[in-house]
Amino acid sequence: MPNSETLAPYPRSLAGTLLAAREAVMAPIRPLLRDAGVTDQQWRVLRVLADAGPLDASGIAERALLYPPSVTRILRELVDRDFLSRAIDDADRRRSVIKITPAGIALVRNTAARTAHILARYRDAFGADRLERFIAEAAALVHTLESFAPPEADRVQDHR
Image (tube, rainbow, N blue to C red):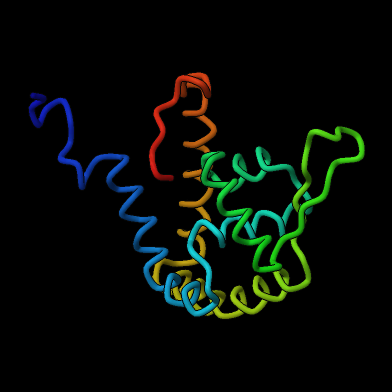
């Protein structure tokens, strides 16, 4: 068993701190997502498509930081609810392209307008410059650590 000199206690570890930060960010936003009738993961898919435009399922999984089997289920649910549409790619008939519908865009716009107030409060409480620096540093950390990840096939699946 590792001692305190080799590993920080989990709440103070890099992974524990980043997860705690994510939960702190999402806790006030989740009720707004529930009011809109979507989960965190569904929201991420909708946001990715609203930002990026049409994508295939693997592109959505990569950008929304979700595992492909989760994306398959989420896409089915959101297509059934008319927030997304699916079409066959003309260039590659084996590939589906997913697009956000007007109903999905309306959901994103309405929910984003409500979450903007929360995000502004975060900025005010933490400091705009400090928050921008934190986001930049977190992005730099992601970029730096990408080379440490095993090949996709070897990665352990978690609940992203």
